[in-house]
Length: 447
Image (tube, rainbow, N blue to C red):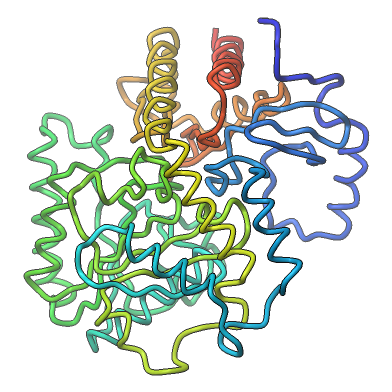
């Protein structure tokens, strides 16, 4: 085992204090919320975490993508503290404040699309999705909404209906919201044998035309919603051709195109928004996660005429656009712009991809390496030829890495994908050490 510079695990994780807190968690918190790491956090900075037992860990999960600028970035913390000295939350729909307007203005400027845009704020990604659907239906007067297999859009009722995984997200919670439909999303690693990517795209695009005939006519569809890169679905990246052709079909039929950029947004893919990689201008974009360095806030940004469709009072909420979230988000965007984090995301992605590719050459259990920018993953299989998912081994790898001080997450419809969502401020020394641990664990568990 290589000597560690940043990881310091004095005792086997979880430590004594973490185990004591785990007992309290089991007694007082329902079993539903899932926990990846067995440790309880005490302090964190950048990509480093210290738990309550004094162990130092490297975080490659980044709060499931909420911490692109790292844990407790000093300049964001300063803005939040300053806001606390003025006011905490008067409620924007009671008394307005400037940071809400300034953040809306900034998002209107930096999101894809040269057309006039408007933005309003909510609390969570799922709430942003719910409101994007409300706005789309209000504007179009249409009922149906189409999402894609493996897509993840949240766990509230409309969002859950759009999400494509039964367990753990939908099982036993029905009936689901009606007038939601799903189509197939490109998954080139698992495309039919003998098909080229171009042929596969054509096949999936033809299925959309067939869907218009067999299931719902296009004049009844309010919106298509998709993640430019699927997050919980396994970091699956579509082709530029597929996304552009889908956008054209929407335009041809007056269907709104909603880009769910909740996990892909704010620099993760090497551009501020993943939609930019595909050369499209979504009608509506849902945003959350890394918008505010961990302060809960989300947004819907879109064409002004669409955003203005709901009448006064038809959208909004008590905590939407909190002052703490607004000032944090403004500083996060400034950090990304001033500290070159888009370029850094691309460099981080190259480092991770190269490391994963080397691991793939050594370990037969790695079936695919994929991603965009710093949104990188490996897919774990039982057999490379048959590509049978290996959920059990994936869980073992993640658990062992967490015990050794590297926090990572799974993803994918089959829960057999290991994904990296490290803060973009992680040092290359920290990243190298974490990737070495992943390499060692896979080697020990499979050789």
